[in-house]
Amino acid sequence: MKCRCGKRAVFHSKVYRVTLCEDCYSKFYVNLVKRSVKRYGILKSSEKILACVSGGKDSTAMAYALKELGYNFELFHVDLGIDDYSKESLKAVEELSQVLDVNLNVVKLSDYGFTIKDANRRKVCSACGIAKRYLMNRFARERGFDVVSTAHTSEDIILFFIKNVLSGNVEYVAKLRPRIEGHDRLVAKAKPLFERTEKENAVLVLSLNLPFTPVECPFAPQDVWKEIIYDIELRKRGFKQNFVRGIAKLSESVETESWEFKHCKICGEVSNDEVCSFCKLRLKR
Ligand code: SF4
Ligand code: ZN
Image (tube, rainbow, N blue to C red; front, side, top):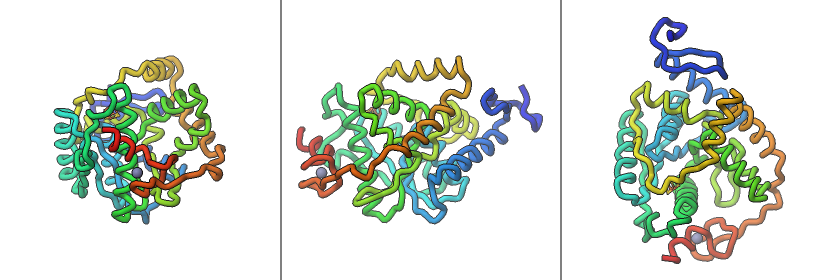
């Protein structure tokens, strides 16, 4: 297969009806991100952005797109203390910082007195999510960043949507907005890749040879819902893209004004409870 420019193609999509080589694909990808950002007002050119990077392909692709689009941003990485996985992840984000010439900030979970391995094994991913959300928000606010950018893909959004609707947490759909404005001590959150798929991100980082770690977290769950989402896409091309656009629309219709927040009596951060989930994690060990 050949690209429209005549070079060997690395990407073919029936959804976009394109066949592209490495060079044409990276331009095409960055343009897709630009289009999402503009359509949903995800980022503003005046903002100082904290881009959260794990060392994986998705956040590497996000950082590349932010750089290409000329945003003012720095990288942020949480060292979770998960043996080889964390070592490889840190190595990848350090290389990424050099390749993109963007400052990297690293926060070690062990500096807060625990690692992810201390969490109850069945709840390790939930503990990890709590820690990452807490640390990125606090770091961003204390260092004067306007917005935190995360690399949630269309698969992540659909997965979160299905699970929350199935558990009856319909109002949580509001958390899936492509951009959530900040309030109180919470910094604005942006998801510039919410319309991108894992495959699109993978093709980008592989074709540009960007640094990322293929090492999987040893706690990564085998999620049958992810397989189901892939199956639907195979049978109904464009499903993911159309579905996340629907979720974005739906998320705007959820009323969040009445959501009440307290402040953690230990750390002072915004919390649903007297003590925030992060402090509960720290104290439990
Ligand atoms: Fe954290 Fe779970 Fe992801 Fe591992 S798989 S990085 S523990 S959320
Ligand atoms: Zn707290």
